[in-house]
Image (cartoon, one colour):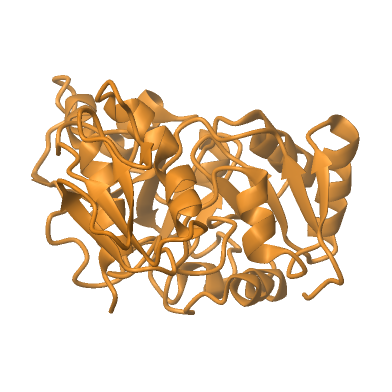
Length: 323
């Protein structure tokens, strides 16, 4: 999987075709989605998926999200009940991953699911990933395009810094829009459970399931969802900078690079106006910047838990966890 260097090419039809050819040859390439940059490989090719794990240095017990072009393609891989279909109708294409029972006929490589009887599946909205899916004609396993456990990439330079020489190609289509990974919802055996908070909030998920047509037997917002690995992104230490990180800070210590929010200033600020959507978009970008600063430690101001603030705080708590 190693390469002497990694090429960076702009998004266009010709370069999508080149990326698809690399994937058909069993390689993996980095491509933007609406959440973060992903590292895509043929999800039906075990050797190609092993290359993703090798490039990321990812633990084999952590499963990968499979990306497909539409609901029909998803139904070939996973068993949908009425509530899963309601969630797909409400949020696909978009930043929602559904964890559903895996169909025996799916053809998905066993490494993708890490031995689980479920599959994490998403229909992305970003033009580059959709064009790549269409060109490949295969489901693509695509975790975030960074070394495992490090800060997720929202710009092409983040990918290059983390994976240069490990993959052959990065497709560049500018910074990602959402800035944090997809919301993950498990919909299995009559239970709806949020396994990872993301751009789609728990309230939005519940609203989509309580429109009068779909009964919610059990709904869990995911407070205890990290006790075992059920889906990608559940490791207690994840999205982590190299430097120690302190959260809920009111002011920096002398040796800390401060990331502020709202009225709490700092060396950088996630959103001076206190806009949580802006903060989510800038989170990983500012963590990369803080990690590259001349200060040995990082501090981050308190972020409200409202709405997408849940997802921001989830990422910050995992980034601060040192194992």
